[in-house]
Length: 124
Image (cartoon, rainbow, N blue to C red):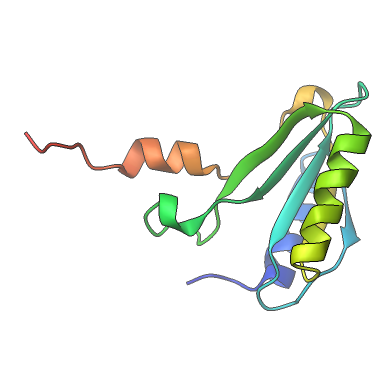
């Protein structure tokens, strides 16, 4: 069962703080089902942006949410442009800012899930 976006974001921020990191909710979206984006400040002038993985590309995940890397090692202007585009398309998204040296963050990624659960084709 998938938890609400509000619950998920709150738990993510608390987990990051409990691990000694820093996270803040910089944009609140729809409490029940707003898309969640995570902006990672690498602390070297570059940023990574993670967003919800398209559901068509993975089987039902165990915890209900998977992310994909939208931007990697991008500058602030590129990130802001991408988020402005998202805001025009879907203004109910959440944005969590995280500081992580080198971009190290523990998020469930669709690539990881797909590698574990993708059936082999053709079957042997």
